[in-house]
Image (cartoon, rainbow, N blue to C red; front, side):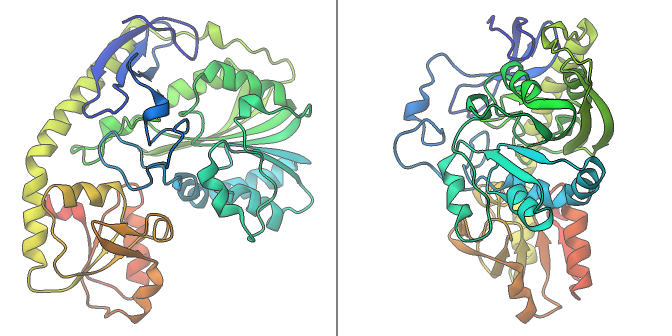
Length: 392
């Protein structure tokens, strides 16, 4: 397979076909920039895929498992809460007059600007109509239903907020060139992305990392390389095994030279080996999935429990043998008002804990936020709290 890279126009080499991909996605690596990206099957028709924005019928909306994409559109809200302190600090230091929201999602950043920085002028784009249901009567500023690439207003911005958007775009080169042209010299770029180092971090793979709509999969060095070739100097880098947050500024002498980005033969080999190792770990995980479910079922067979986290991770356990018996609450503060159910059980806001016995066992089905969730539950007086990983 030879396909043009969406970052540098280099050629791509296929590494692995993703199991269960509705789009027939294959993981590829660019022979020039060495960055991973997904290429869909030539037979894939987005107009017939209920997971796609281009589907003309009723879209599929649930916590999908495997490579499927659930269209819940809540991930940016999770990330907003995670980096809000850094965002506030950056806004106070950069003092922008006008900001642009690159993929506004459900409007978290827009409402935050309206409430906390009313003197700052806001613009935002969001192509997915599903998100617009979240803009009603809650202080969300006007958001245009459009891709950033199609934004028409002839105006330059002092601050661009781009959170979990770049991995979705059709062409990183086209998207970043549009961003480049929208930025004033010295403008701040606040970028947040999934960290593809995640595939090397965990011993077990309970959630497919290479989901349908994440067309680009970045390691930290990839993102830094991209930004440097887009004329953006790097000021702040924060990363963990799950996410990257980078703050930079457009240089006054900036040139857009993304097609000049280079990787290396050794990086390409590392990428290939990482992918093959990842899927070997997934194969191993599949063998222990049912055993973990049996252990949880045994743990709760004679007692009521609460589950915290009602997304893809929990759904995978239900699919592998976890039963509903004695689960009195499934708590998910981000999904309870969107998907509403998981395996037929209602999702609830954590306010139900106010009336729950403090001795009730709670199992947390989360990954990047596990420590924070357990700490929060402990502070509320719940001491019998453990991660799902305790049953592995």
